[in-house]
Length: 211
Image (tube, rainbow, N blue to C red; front, side, top):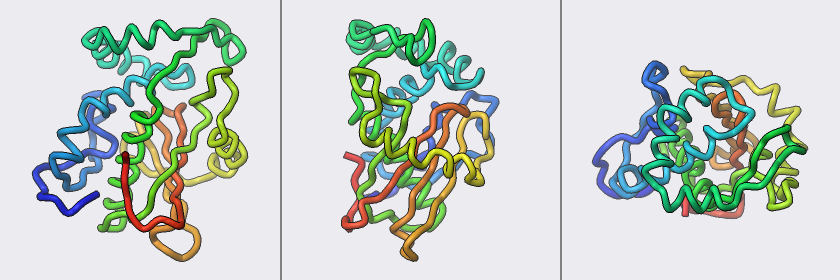
């Protein structure tokens, strides 16, 4: 992400996403304090949002009850804000609930993971601004946002991609190269076999940022 002093290694995704029994051959990249230690609370926040998804597998449910629920209980003020926004989401699944959360904060973590995966593969920084697409996050009326519509338009092709990852029940990913420029690629990710995201670059940008 930057030219600051390397002080540690960053896991991609963060280690907190992985139950202890699934911490096998995790991807790591060199990192500074700003882009690792100082983002740990954001990492936890994104994990909590992902693990509540009704589309995920049993490992996600287990991780919610063993880690995310404790995190929610520690952060009462933030949790109360989320709970106060609960609405019924029966059109998605009978008995389901939807809630509001900080999308910008969530996307920062996903972009950070994408930058780390890129560095792991290519050995250099990804000099592009990134957009996060998913159909797992909706508008207030539970319809797709424009990124969700874009994701759905490509979903059949995304489902055919060969996936990498040493812990497939927790996280898998695939690089999609196009345009003949190493900066102009996309990354497909899926967490807990049920929460997919597509990260695409702004091809007109020449710098990186997860802010």
